[in-house]
Length: 238
Image (cartoon, rainbow, N blue to C red; front, side):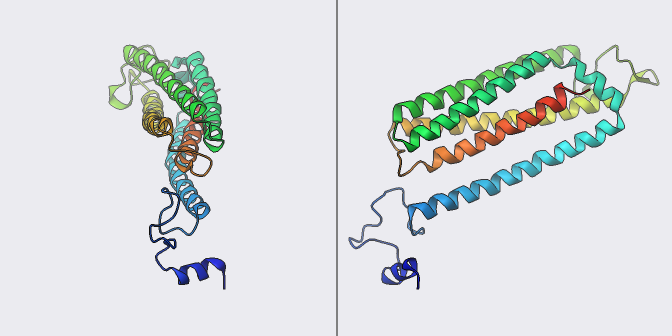
């Protein structure tokens, strides 16, 4: 019989001998140990991230199918994207991944001040990313490079019955859908980072308990990884 089984039989409610529960206030009663609680939380986050991969994976597949249908239109449409701004955002997110890693490390090593600093830097990087996307989107709106039937750009090379090929509008439909959805994830990430930064400043995280920091870090790395795929897909089409 395992040790955990013996413990549960001795005290079926998971409380200590004093009747007031576990010593760590973060230890939830339905977990035997803090390690089990941490591992369970992490598995749950990985399952959630798997659904995110499926979501964006479906969009990537759809983009590939439409690119195969309108290869020339997609190639011409991508020339309207501002590659330097896309590259800048890539660098910003890569740097934010590093600051997030350092934030998790700071939480694990009881460095509260460094934790808060790295989280704030990560939030600033996210804000820079959104600011750059704002300028990119503004340029598209001014040029009429809009999704679906809102597309109004003039001067496209491929015409059908005197109108631009639907391939152009299809390209920007996927562009706004995928980068917009990614942008929503960035906004959610900012809210989560701010939440753990506030808690970190209160001293709630230490080497014994830093699960929220680690889980938000996993989420942020996925957001960064998705952009690593979006950047070459849209900005480096050849």
